[in-house]
Length: 315
Image 1 (tube, rainbow, N blue to C red):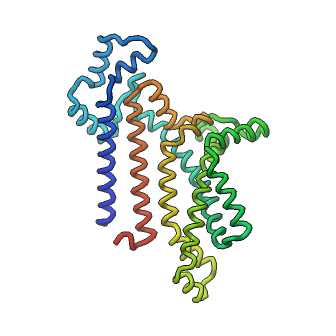
Image 2: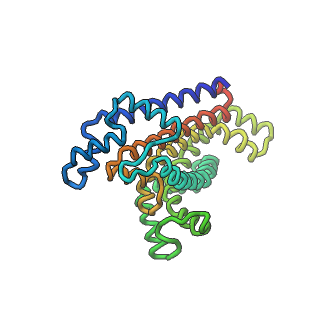
Image 3: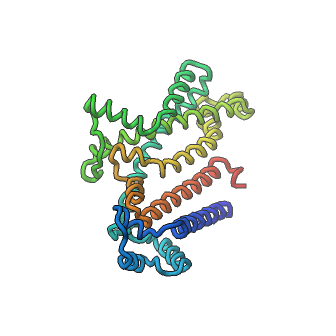
């Protein structure tokens, strides 16, 4: 329990550091965000309007007071309001975040369903035909950028074969079948490259485990091949796979911008791009903080999985 408590406390400290750094980066960089917002069309900002907006947003108060208010707001899950249309940033993120998580979750399931069994089978057949072919395919898939793969999928499956729509979004509650169809191609465009990474790490980790003494002992005791693979090889080979997989998922939290743009999927990344283009700093900081919190939470989950997978880590 103390091990788990330490991990939680470290995660909270990391989140506080990120909040502080993001706050400082916005308030101590040159330029006034209100003036940049009002003058982005090329004109000059009216000083009276700038002063009014600064007072409305609380930007005319001392920096430390703004920092305290920011921490209080985050504690209440309030990320403030957009400088552009005064909408609640928390409400907009709550609306968009499930779409991004759904996309990443589907891509993760696809990558695990392909990469894990293929990696184990390739390691068990090291040097065989399947191992060589799968390794070549994985190297090729890993080198294709997601936006290139997504564009090719639209060209082939939407334009040429007319099998799926080119992109868009429909709520699952309205049309479940069409929702899953629209989700399939963007998830595949992410999941194929991730599956290649999972395959390579699983294969390498399994090859390291296979010659160890306890595997030979399990075989000598007459255990079945399936039991050896599932209970002895896979469990001990999973730790590096969990590490790399979690890092890749964390990267995808902030890296789905191109995929969501190509397939017109209205997720969190599109909100971040819109906020940057509109110089909407509260929206940008809100999205960054949410992505950072998710990344830290993911790392915490990985630490817990480490402890569950290998009890020695807890000690």
